Image 1 (spheres, rainbow, N blue to C red):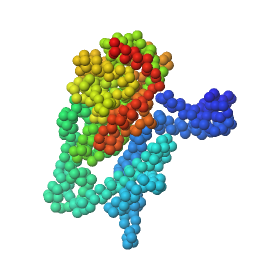
Image 2 (cartoon, rainbow, N blue to C red):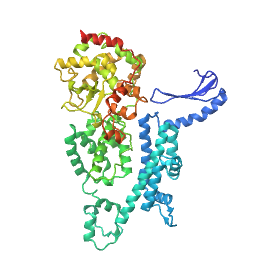
Image 3 (tube, rainbow, N blue to C red):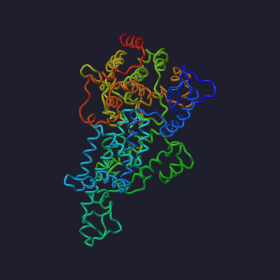
Length: 600
C-alpha cells in the first residue's frame, strides 16, 4: 500500500485502485485498516472526514482493542453500573419495573408488577427469553427507559460478535437480579408492616426485637438501617471484622500481613465504621483515590510523617508524585475484595460494592500495557544466537541448567517464572504415559499467587524431544531435591528473582534482541522480559482450545462453576491441547546438541 498523491488526509492510503483508512492503535503494535470501497479520491476524503472523529471518540472511551477476557469484564462493568444505579435510585426504577410487569389475570383482576406472583412470572419469562428469538426485543425494551441505552449502543459497536450476544444476555440477567431484589425488599416491608418504634440516638446498638420489647409507643416506621441491624450487619465494626479475617488468613497463607496492610489503606479512605454503610459512590471515590498512592520506597519521608493514607494521597495529588505500579494497585484491590467477600460470607455485609468497578479479574494484566510477546525472529535469535545457547550451551547444562531450561519451559507451559524456578524434582510426575509439572506450594520455600495457581501442566512434546526428562533424571541421580538447585532464595521473591536478574542484564538480553526492540525498551515503549513468554504461550493457543482449559493452563480463576467444582480435565484432553502450542521454529539442531550432552 502507498499513500495517494495530492491533497490527501492523514489516515488515507491507496492500494492498487482502492482507498483505505489506516490508523495505529495507541500503545499497541496493531493497526486498523478499513476498505473505503471506492476508487475516487474525492469520495474517499469525504468518507475519511466522517470516520476520523468517530474513531477518535472510540479511542477516548476505550483506547486499546480488547481481548476476549477484557470484553467480558467490560460487559460486566456496564451491567453492574446499571444494577448499582438502579438499586441506588430504587424508587424510580422499581416504579418502572412495577409498570412494566403489571398484568391482568384470567379472572380480570389487575395484578401490580410488585406482587410476588408478578415478579415470579416476570423472572420466568425473562429467563426463557435468553434462549428464544424474543431476546433482542426484550433487551431493547429493558434499556430504552434507562441510562444504559447509550452505553450499550456504544458497546455493541466495538464488541466481538460473540460478546454482543453476551451483553444482551447479561442485561436480561441484571434485570432478573433487580426483580429478585424487589421481591426481597417487598417482603421486608410486609414482614415489618406493623412494627413502629421510638428511636434513641444510637439505633445500631440494639436489635429490632429489643426495640419491640421496650418501646410500646410506636411512632416511626423502620428505616433501612434498622432492618440491617436486625440482620446483624451492625454486630461488628470494620476493625473487629478485620481481626477475624486475619485469623482466618493466618491459617491459609504464609504472608497474611499483606492483606492487613492493604485493608488498612481501604479503611483510611472510606472513613466508615460499619461496612454496611458503604455506598457505591463511596467505592467509586475510593477507586479514584487509590490510584494516586505513591511508592513508599521513593517517598519514605512522606510516609513517615503522614498521619493517614488519606493525607499521603492528598499530598501525592498536590505534588503530582509518581504512583505505584498499576499491577501493585490491582494486587491491593484483589486483597481488599477478598476481605469484603469474607464479610459477606460471615454475614457482616450484604454485597461487595467494589467488585467489577475496576477490572481485577485479569490476573496477569501488568502495571504497563506495553509488555509484548517475543516475535518468532527474536525467539530464534535467543535459542540459536545468544551466548547461553550457542557458545556456553554445554557448560550451562552442566553448571547452570536454569539458563537453558527455564526460558524453554516458560515458552511451552505458560507458567509464571517463580512457579518453575521453585519446583522440586518430586513434583514432576507421570500419569497414563503423560508427564506433568505439578505447580503447588507444599514446601516451606514455595509460594503461589493464588488458589487457581495450583494445577498440573502436561509437559509439551517439544520439551520432551529437547531432553527435559533426561535432565530431570540427572538431577535425581545427583540427589538434587530442587530442579534448579543453583538458584538462590530470597524471602519476598522466592527463587525467580535470581534468574530474572540474569536474564534481564543488558549484556545478555541486548546481545540477541534486534535494534528496534532495544530502542523501544530503552525508550520504555515496550517491555520484553521473562513474563513475555507467558504472553507467547497464551497467544499460541487462543482460538485453538477452549477458554476454560487455557485459563487452567495459565493458572487463572475459572469462570464456569462446572469447571471449578467437578473433576479434573482428562489426561488425553490436556496433552492434546498443550501440544497445539507452536512457534514455527525448527528446534531440531537444539534437540540434537542437548540430547548429545545427556547421552555422553
